[in-house]
Length: 559
Image (tube, rainbow, N blue to C red):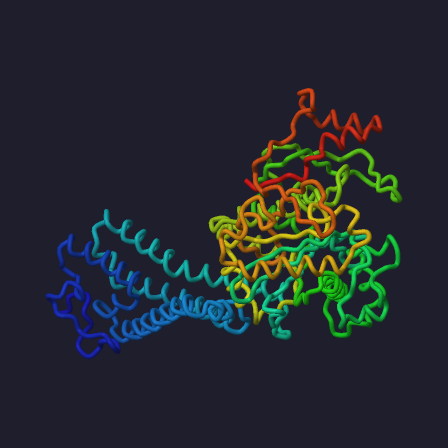
């Protein structure tokens, strides 16, 4: 007689042994309710922890053995990944970011997710919910669904996130390119904040910083170049030396940030096969100006920041002074704007993308150096506040926004090495130099002495290489400043607040870069500053009073 479960003799499926009538694991019919309940939950746990084990003990052994072999192989690969993490982290990162390996990994994760889900469905058949008491059935089904989401769902989501990230990496970084080698033991990356617009051809990089990293120790220095630097020198191998052999010296219009647009519009023929001639020419100008070899660039589109910050859910900052959202230009020659479209108040603020963009872009009533500080503060706030929870829950929006923000000539094949280098740099003190206040007189950028610049840069980098691991080499309040987190492509740590300008070549006098400042929210006589007050000064033509009240708007700290 058949007991309602065991197949008739000779009809067993391949790999399926005929259960003994007294075996409650393979033959649950007639078993007591507590045994059936325990059996159901044990089979679910076995499938969750050791996929295939439930089939071996209660179902198709051939299927179970195949699944168990896959499980063992995956455990071995996981152990290998952990070993690579400690032995050769860059190799592991290259596997995860490489176009072919990452595609195979996405495909493998998707197949594993489907396979694991199939095992859970098979486990549900083995449980035979019809034999359970009506009170227990929903709990067992719910437990199985939760286990399936935890396991198969997690693998599927991981495959999805990896696919999104590989698309973003493919959009930002070049798929192939020459391998970058250290120059004098350092990698030098040019970070450009590009100010794009519908009325412009190409981008105008209004923020220029070189991130110089020691190839062995990760010791890092940041060198900021003001957008209004004149007579920039092109490196010896630059094609633009044929056009400007004595430097970019065509007058007041030849600021270093104009090189990108001029080359894009007029000299693309000098850069055959180069994806972004303007960016490459700017890189060569910064190299020649600083007297170092800059190997790669990362260009961050300032307009794209709006989408990226909105994707993050906004950023939180402490603003030192009121910042205008400038209205239309009414006097192009003198750079005079009409009535502001709004104001960002001093104090603790949560900025959406639009306001964060204006906070970093506005320079009305102050100079470029205040704007540079605010841009760096916004970038630092993004780094600080992009926590794992935000990244996981908004990963797709952030990745899509990132493809509109960042452009680079760094090869994706070398990305792992540079991420590994960034991890070495994390937590180390960062030395800083600005080719302008506070390290040079404000007029220095108009008539720069390049021998002095080269000497100061060489001294900075030599000190960084020699003292990268010496915690006492740079303390808060010095030119090296406090530790800064490793930055993603296009982001720069905040620079120290400017002090009184120093003479060219003199030791810099730098205030600590910290949140130890009091936002200016009142006038000197204690009256609260309001938007209406500032607008009334503007209507009266009293812009000097506005300048006095917003003079501290370069002070900023991420919250």
